[in-house]
Image (cartoon, rainbow, N blue to C red):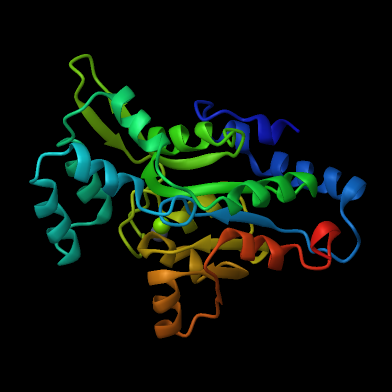
Length: 255
Ligand SMILES: [Mg+2]
Ligand SMILES: [Zn+2]
């Protein structure tokens, strides 16, 4: 399936245009989907949802100059957006890219992502990671676990000739509710993904905007608390294995 072979370096949006997504899901569905399973796609957060901790924060703590904490505090006080915060923090990292990627690859993950991605592929359901984290760190984690076929939409780390790092946010939106570098609800509409047919899985602040619009939200930690406060319906979860079981209830091995 073309969609799942998409590499991280391939340019959006041409390779992930909505017609391809829908066609891919539809053709697989007609072959393999049991009747009764609704057509949908799964969008999944990365940091804290696929990894057990926030990869960007772990890297900052290990490799950035201590000033990165001051930017964090300014963000917590609402003085700057998370997009600006991350851009400033990344510039304080004092290590080369290969060191960072080796470090990221060792971060612990929720192993349930493996089964989730296998089930989605098996039933032709698009699974896309949408992250306000950093593409190269995500890439390192996915590669370590044999998951590089999962498409990723995220911020992009660039390294200049002097080894200085900078962060680009090609999927930011000026209207983002949380000032994220990757505005997840804007991403969905940019790629023509119907949020009425989107199952969203997340845990944090950058997941808020899309959680107000997705068909169903699987939420843990801070996102769950926020959804409860806002009166947004969500399904609480702790592991991706649980989410997979519930998504595929009554189907195949989860019957
Ligand atoms: Mg998260
Ligand atoms: Zn947003």
